Length: 103
Image (cartoon, rainbow, N blue to C red):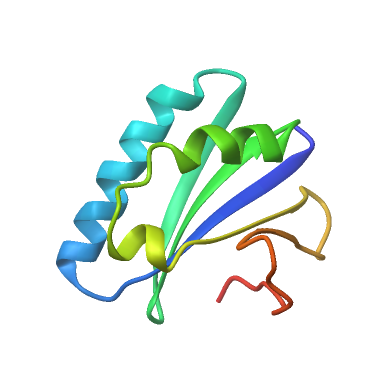
């Protein structure tokens, strides 16, 4: 797989962590073998799910339908980079001009 897609959310409680794990499990099923969920991290007020894909925009389109309405969807940010690269291209929110980073 050529790209790493990062789905990023705000979170710092055990309830946030539980929601992250639930979403990760839903994404594993929904994305199938075309896009591979590569894990998550949690800390510094931030939660991330990592997905390897040859088509990160297609993976995001599927993933977005699995994110529950509420805090997770309101604070969602998504970006991708080449696996060996350092520069992220933001795809959500679509009008974002903020630099994307994983803490």
